[in-house]
Length: 462
Image 1 (spheres, rainbow, N blue to C red):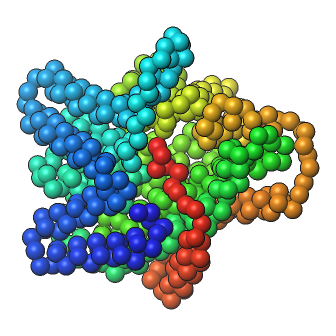
Image 2: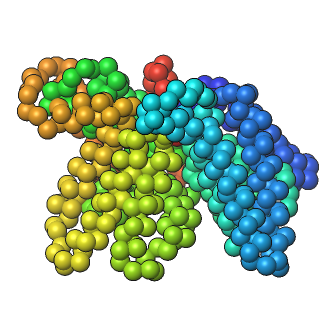
């Protein structure tokens, strides 16, 4: 059930919303939470009922481990660390089995000329996100920042359907207290209006912009056997903007849906393609993942507290892990490595004291981001090389009407990403007036006209 589907928009979402607030009005608060947790599990099961036992087992394991760690607060630190290690290891083993087993088997077979049979497991939807969410919960429980004694509340924390499949990655302490506020038990018209507004912005970004760019990227990466200079650049740029509008559109829709339930999810994007450095980019792109990598990998590795060279190592290691988390493939590892090296390179450049003009910093950053997305998108090493050969070769400079239309589409997407206020800036200006009601209606109706396109959310595969 996609957010941009008729069954979600006209059936599931309104039913879950109406029943939730009716239950909050006439029943104890726990009943409303239970309904929303069950609705979220139904939402998840709608994709594949076979994945339901897995997520329930993961929830049960982490709930027990979280409670055990919390109750061991007065115990020796060695015991608490051992419990945390067991909890994190259990989550990583689950993720590793489903997501990375075939990757390791393939590489072992290639390295040792063996013939170990691949497991060919279907990747459970959202496993990376609900695994990271629960690892963060266990670490927060260890640090004394999260305690959850209600199984219903914990299930809701993990499965709340706006963020379940592709984030944002949440902290328990920033989400669950919102469900317990008295005013959150009632419909708040201002939140409803604002939520619908940001949802419609996200819907437009996804189905009108991202899904229109998708065929250009697919043709270049997956279909064409060779690419000329213009084709290669349209291919890479189409994916660069498709990925942004797809994932930021999903995040906007998730934030908008949650707002109707009076829940504020963290902002996940802040005009990342306006960044003037690689550090600036990662402070704007997938911000909850950046926060997770910093708080739970970079800082525990030592951060910048153990000297310059150790800081550089920690940066590269963090981005390597971040790249591998995205996918079981060498192209993702290369993507992460390049971003780690870029982080180190920027710090080395800063030590020279030379300040680049902002336009120059932006251009270098954007070209680097665009180039590294090629590795992120390519299914194989050969696909990546095919695109790069075209981008850095001046052969095949032919131009056609089809290419001209693609260039115009990409230019329009670039103009929106670079020069138009982002969704959070628009939301901050939002007022429940006739003007904004007309904008909401226009975005929604226009988006509905694009529902017949083939559509998928790119980050569902991660």
